[in-house]
Image 1 (cartoon, chains in turn blue, brown):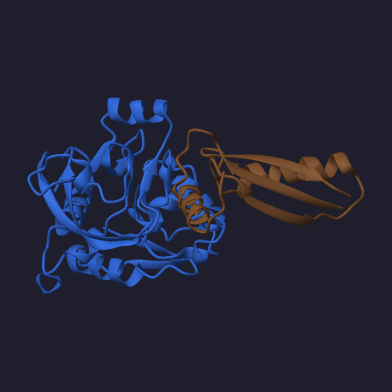
Image 2 (cartoon, each protein chain N blue to C red; image 1 turned 180 degrees about the horizontal axis):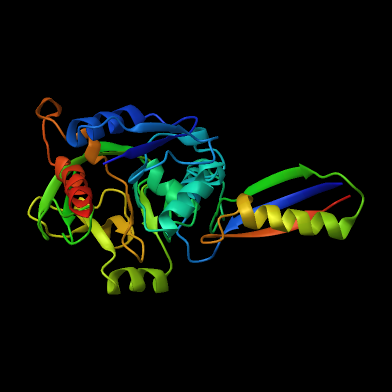
Length: 233
Length: 80
């Protein structure tokens, strides 16, 4: 699996992501600077990592979404290429029109830095085939603007088409406001686009992939992607 | 030409920052404030003297970048 990790000024999670990709795929990802206009040849997976691109100036991810490399990413996604957008990456993907909706300020106005429980809503995507539907995983979040908002029509479509892939849940999988720390509509933590090739999620699975990190719940996402590409080859 | 672009949240979009500011005003003893919603102002100097052209360019700028039209409205005021 050949991965390309995008790097914008202010991104700070690209090395964690590269480490996770290296550990699980066995292959060093390409680090792609935002000013490039093409992706490396043979890229299988584009990853938009977390951080504070452009200092969150104007709106989170707004300026990064308009960087030169994003035209190439849009073209790649249009042809069916897989895009994994994490945290600031999710914000960038929404601003770039790769995913609907917007991530707004956490409802209780505090930056949240903690482990959360996510219910995996479906296991039939390239991103979640490493899990079982209904499985609950524990992964870290670190964000001030993770409150997923979209208009009623968009939410209805997302839900109706089964495009909500991860939800904030209790440890036993129950959806309850208590466990929805940022107030996101319907406790939405991660979604896919219509085609299912672009995933955006606020939590950081890349930070739970090896034993020394405390937990390995996030490994399944990357392992599933590696399997997906093994099968496709 | 000088212009101002105002970017505000669409009605119906929750504004917890506005609410926090409301509460702070109340604590400071500023009475009678029924509601607060926070927006943005961009002061822009644009080349040329064509008013209509300036408005069109700024409308384009607002749609493309300054406002996220999923959740925000904008208004362009060319002041000269």
